[in-house]
Amino acid sequence: MFSNIVTNSTRVFNFVLYNIQFRRFSSIMSNKSLKIGTHDGQFHCDEALACYLLKKLDEYKDAEIVRTRNPDKLADCDIVVDVGAIYDHDKKRYDHHQREFAHSLKSLDISLPYVTKLSSAGLIYYHYGEGIIRNELKKAGMENLTRCLFIKMYENCIEEVDAVDNGISIAEGTTRYKCNSAISSRISFLNPRWNEESSPEDSDKRFESAMKLVGEHFDDRLDYYITSWIPARSIVESAFHDRFKAHESGEILVFTKGCCPWKEHLTELEEEEGVGDLVKFVLFTDQHGHWRVQSVPKEVNSFESRIPLHQDWRGLRDDVLSQVSGIDSCIFVHASGFIGGNKTYEGAIKMALNTIKAVNQ
Image (cartoon, rainbow, N blue to C red):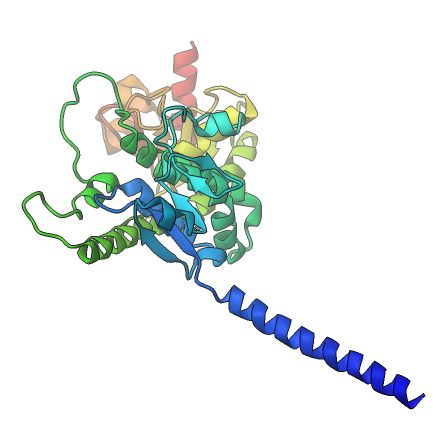
């Protein structure tokens, strides 16, 4: 009996000792610095952004950046971007320079419309971007908007990096002027000049500066969408769904608590609802509490309106405008007719409705 107790105690001791040793080993392994591999020499915006995005993930936040073209050193890296001539997500290899590579977001996810060839930045963003954005949205309790912002950030931050790195021009033909202030250009300026001496250590420090610069750009854009774009979207969406309260036609949108950036949101909401170019005017108050009536542009960045304010009113002000329009309390109508003002809500909505009526006659 005593021998059984000793034997059992020995087994328990060995089991506990094994667990302690295992935990120590696991701790050592978990503290092992992971390595993110990329090429050395002249750097570009795409791998600087790819490395920055990876270091925003908990898994790689403390990872070492290894800049080399040595195959043996790259093989020792846990993840490799922009070098190695391999794209294999399972192996965590993300290069886009190999001849057979032709992936875009659309080729990887048919639900996405973007056909620009991916760089290492786009590849890393495709595989890890939603996780990065979700982590930021969790802080604001808005994880449900992860996919929405994933798309917005690609379209307005990542895609241009992909295009520039792959030599894809923004438009066909001869450009009218040069743009050297875009993020890819600013990153390229951090490389040593042709007649400037630079050591590998200096090059690595410059790459760190490139990661910091493009990282600030990415974070600023993401912060804009979380703290500004989403709140504006909510306001426009509410006004859009309440549009029939303003008028039975649904052609007038009213912002009851001041204005916000609305053109992009309105266009997208109309597309989502399948109502075409329904809304013609947007009403909102200015800093004096007066009402503005603004024509909806034909396109988001267009100066041409779907319906400009009445031709006979354009360029007129105050009493003259009220007399010609037959609407009390008028303030002004811009010479192009894209915007006007009235001291009252009733007057502003009459300006919109009378214009629509005149066009439809």
